[in-house]
Image (spheres, rainbow, N blue to C red):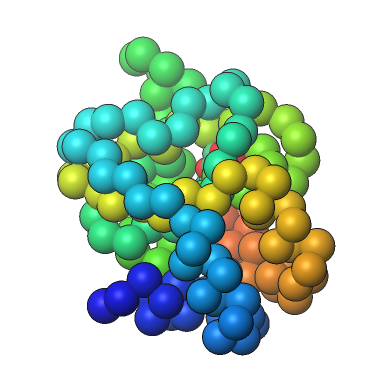
Length: 137
Ligand code: CMP
């Protein structure tokens, strides 16, 4: 699948038109993480939003023996939006379970995108609601 088709299939970008999607494809950088590799660390400053192209990641709180898994994400899912929206440190760590490829959007790109396309707030809200329900279960 080419990059534009892939971006168009991600819920976060579902409301964007073709022109916006091809702009996104030019901005995104791709990175591959090995199994066990840390992608985002709890407490660090957020610099990018991540969209998973392939692979799986685990979202964790805490460190060492006190580490607790709080979720798993896969292709088409995104993470790392909270620190960029709130301007606060990363709320959790994200670790690759298997080889995982992500698209990265740097903070200013994500903020500009959200300002220009405020309807992107809807899939972000849906992801937050899903996490909240999972946490309550
Ligand atoms: P951020 O706080 O920037 O960095 C860690 C990311 O993990 C966070 O943004 C969310 O995208 C994601 N995240 C945090 N908590 C959960 C959860 N319970 N389930 C799934 N993803 C989460």
